[in-house]
Image (tube, rainbow, N blue to C red; front, side, top):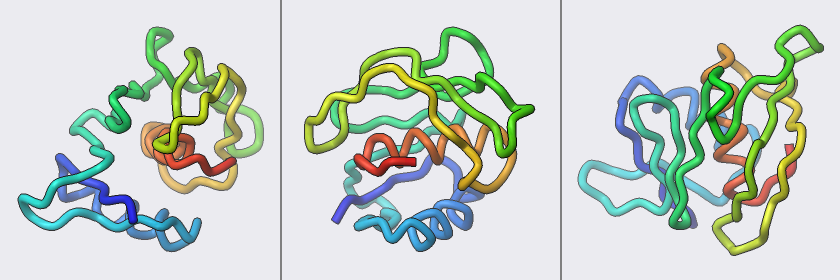
Length: 119
């Protein structure tokens, strides 16, 4: 089971919903508990020795490419690896199945990619 740490307690509810909805083999870390993946205060995702920056800026690892398409699309701009070591090449990532504002959707997509789940 993957343990997910949070910088902001306000992210707890939507992350619990994401874990449940996608039936992830993961749970949120308790206070002071070691984690495998960490969601920082800016919505970036750390895990597996890498940082996946998420945002609307062009320099982010995962950035919005089209918010006008149904549900929106993001672009993975650099290679990354799943927690189990599989390489993911740059590509378009659909956001339609994810809930919340654009920044939250990008963070959720980064978590799913890191966990090796297709979106």
